[in-house]
Image 1 (cartoon, helix red, strand yellow):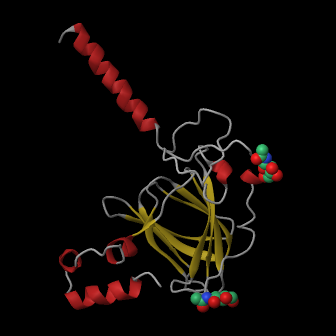
Image 2 (tube, protein in one colour; image 1 turned 45 degrees about the vertical axis):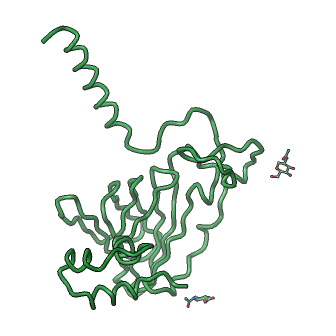
Image 3 (cartoon, helix red, strand yellow; image 1 turned 60 degrees about the horizontal axis):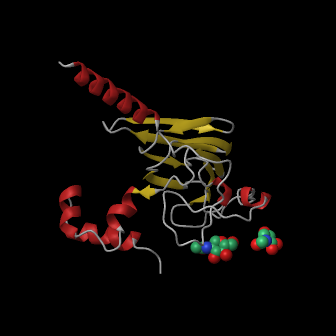
Length: 218
Ligand SMILES: *[C@@H]1O[C@H](CO)[C@@H](O)[C@H](O)[C@H]1NC(C)=O
Ligand SMILES: *[C@@H]1O[C@H](CO)[C@@H](O)[C@H](O)[C@H]1NC(C)=O
């Protein structure tokens, strides 16, 4: 191998190893860049606004429990860049999740973030599934923490008799949430039935039933 080939190879290896360190949002290039959510400019994140104040870094929305009187008996209250515009370019965000007894935060992924949850109250059965379809699950209670690695499908259910709540932290300003069932059964426009009947090895009737149950409420 010629010397220049070695140079190229080493360069590529460095590039690959550097790329593997970039596991969350990109590095910031300035102290702050408070998101101008109203701006029409599209870039990787949000345009910075110039007239900023402490309130751009503040949010009181996680102080109180979210309502859990919905289909799943659980509610996620996000505290992302969309609620705290000061988070733009900072690579972190939070959420609060409240669960009625029996409440489920159904299987979903965050494409852009690892999640770590801290149990505020109650007890939850939680788990994530690896790309080898191995389930890692655990029961966690008040004061305990569990981690859901970036991109992996995970869930939490309150099998207890009292309400439960967690505070979640993410290494992304906007982790993104994709619920497995809603993605495949309630997309817009909808995925054609044959894809779902073959995938789930069931008939059209079953697929139509699930689609109607998960259809976005008007
Ligand atoms: C900056 O924002 C504050 C409130 O957030 C407002 O009172 C003030 O008029 C704004 N100044 C400018 C120059 O836009
Ligand atoms: C949930 O409860 C709140 C307040 O108790 C009520 O305003 C709301 O309509 C309820 N939602 C559903 C879906 O029942």
